[in-house]
Length: 328
Image (cartoon, rainbow, N blue to C red; front, side, top):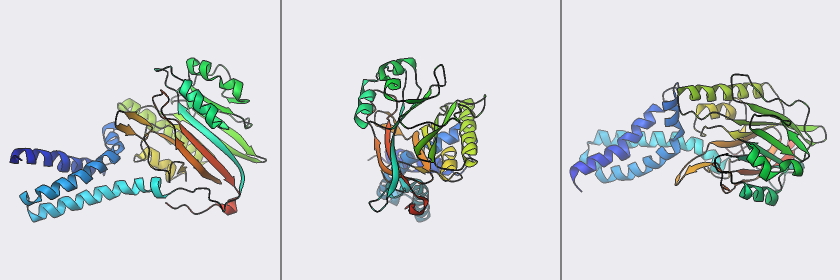
């Protein structure tokens, strides 16, 4: 291989990902730094490829450069693996020795109005028969095809709402339903769902703005911070479902996992992309939970002609004394 071509490939496969990794150490005060962190999983793949490539060309570099390069590749790779680990080895799952008080299932989907293809989603709803269906980007076309008001007794928000959010439930809903964390943010739906006598779960449904520029970056940050603050001061069992427009490596996602004590229902079931373009995908949608809940099953459904892949989650409700220690 020509020396010039080897040097170019080394820059692309080794040094560019290392520089990108170094930028993750900076505070995410703008959307470009945030986008860099969002692509941490893709950068991990490049670190692995780059390590093998650098083994091939290492003799062209001095010993100190070799040691420093491999050390940085390992350091930045471990920082990503730390966040990926719970998705394969973590989570609080319902085992055979756990006796549940009750259970409920949730189907979450983002219904994108561009495609107007809802028959596959309706088929999944019929097959899975979830107790609760949570939809974002809800539009009249989807409502007409899905006809969920005919299948579910309890609906929030009421008719005439234009938030694009909807929860359809066979389980009774509480009376304290709200659709806002401020007039200057994207709408957020808070709905108490009664899952057992004297037991309810606060469902939160949201779609955060996509951080495609500085204004949208700050708008997403604002709404997610306000939701996190509200839930931090609202005790009890809770479930959040929605398009965060944030991967698990971002700060706005981590505030729910760290400060608010939420767990991701995907933990222990692998890290799956919810939004994809060809072979490229990102995990932008999340179902988070806390309290005396365990995940019995988590399934990423086919995209069903939608822009994002739906999730199906089965929860078990347990007594506080039975809560196991999380693995990750």
